Amino acid sequence: MTKKKIKHTIVLETDYDYDMIGICSHHNDYRIVWGLNELLDIHLEKANDFFVVSSPKGKISEHPFYEFDDEENYMTFFFIKNKHEAKFLIPEQKQIDYFLFILNNNLHSVSTVIQRLKSLPTVLAAYEFDPTEFTSTEHIIFE
Figure (cartoon, rainbow, N blue to C red):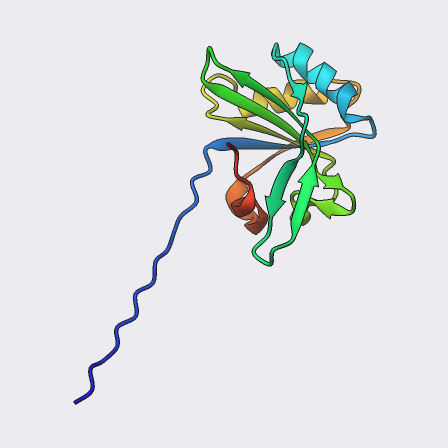
């Protein structure tokens, strides 16, 4: 008598504990960051290394980024360039130039941040995105 094989499937759910804002602009990242720092009263600083994302197929993309750790409010901000060396951070949104990620956001209303971002002369458009809509966000890991 042969035993019936039982298959078990493990489904892991990704926890997206961040807000994701896409920004369109013709300006360099440092000009937008300067405006963001003034606007949100934060201090984004350029990282010495790249934000690295690896896909399931083993492809790696590196993107310049800025970071600010708000220790007082337990929040972290990441401003990441979407396209670098012909590779996209979020390939589903190729028209977006930069992404602003706000981790553990307990202070800012995203709609208010977007409204204020649109008032910056360096920003053409700003949009809120739901990270669960994109498969590529599964590979974005903030440490």
